[in-house]
Length: 498
Image 1 (cartoon, rainbow, N blue to C red):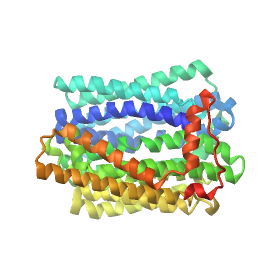
Image 2: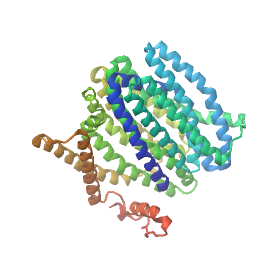
Image 3: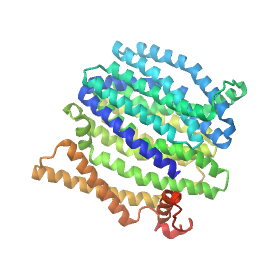
């Protein structure tokens, strides 16, 4: 888990730089209105097109992790299902965009984004097999290629005065390159044979239903706010919200790593004793809380610095409160990724559609009340509350003896460290105002980030936030290839949580 997570983190840092570069380009070259159109199109396509990808990834990973000989069968038949479903979904995107009265320019954007759906669906099938074989490097490199090429070409064409439709085509090209890379690397390992298996297709579709329902309902409550904003407010408001939500989406990388890296490991642990599975859940939860809480805290306390640096325009000043409202939702979303993996590992996925249905009713109903009153800020806060609701609901479906109660100690200590971080950022704000320091926005955000990280890590170290056995496990994992390890204390030693 540590080895694959490190690979994913290195790749994520590179894709982060590319994604942030694109976000800066959106703010400086497109403006809030054009960016709002692009964000609306991307969201609409994902919202309508999600069924062609929902549930298949979990099934492929679970089946192939348990029996690698099933890889070719699942590859060809899963691709067949997606290729047959995509034309229906694409026609639905075109029809609904016309019926809802979107402008011609936005409808063209939606049509381009609909093509990206097909490329992503095929690419996700390839990546799920790589993750099942625990070959994380290939999806990571594919993501780097997609984001890097999109950022480089996107920056160039937008600087030359290209429109938002050209940018959508650039994103489509990046997605196709990612899919091509992963397909070639998978072909070199497995080859490719077309073997239509009607019984397997029926099995995939039948067992996919809980994941599909959960995924469809989940993507609706996760994306419906942008569509509701586009219908109930202005395009500029969608641009303000989308500017913050794109950053929120980018920072959900830890959730993706958790889902793809821990899932096959938890499946293997579940075949043994419950003690092994509980240890896997607990160690993952410790990592989630230690990493996600400072990310969310920095988003909240330093939102004005982040928005000022990324978008460099007063048009996006309204993005600051939206980003602050979304920040707590990151922590809950990361925790939900682990909890949903645990439920799927225990083969209780039939219960998760009820969770998504309750979340959808909660989110949609309150959005109808909050958007007219608080617009994008109300939608942002409600997103965080919805993720918190899902945490509470998922906990009820996990056996009590598997719940990582001792991770609460890690979470509380991390919160104290985040409080110290917030105090340091507040002092920097006061110093800038009182001393009127001539610091540029770009330098300012990096100074604040460096101080925030230093204060958080120093406070966390003083509080002994991470259990000693976790630190030794991480150290040994990095040193294993050199043959130098440190003796690790027993897992059951209560003192390591003190």
